[in-house]
Image (tube, rainbow, N blue to C red; front, side, top):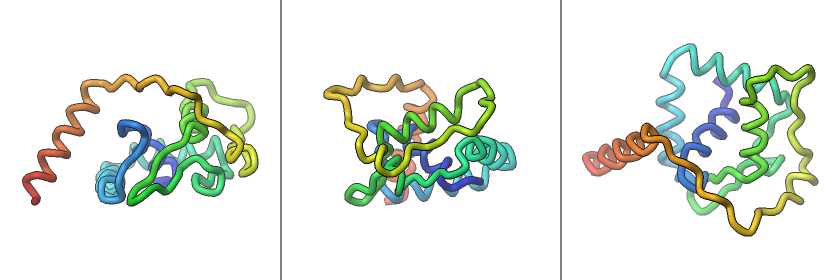
Length: 131
């Protein structure tokens, strides 16, 4: 399993792309034990961006107790997941370019599939039961 690709995939599934460390660790553990398919998929995606470094390239930010995917992180993830097979690996933006990325004034809300909403509801219920 590729840690950095997994982090991007987890963060993009959360509203606003932000997750607290507790949720990240739980989701990471779930995916790590989900079987060979996930590990193979993340390795394939990571092979498309061989120099991937989510923090130094500004793809993920550390924010008060959690991590948040940036616009650049979403773009790199989308390019990795493109169905076409590129002739050459996709290059992640260098540190200088990633820092120069600016957020648009308004980001349209992401459409949340019913499964994602169901997972969030289940996670909330599990946290309540655990408390």
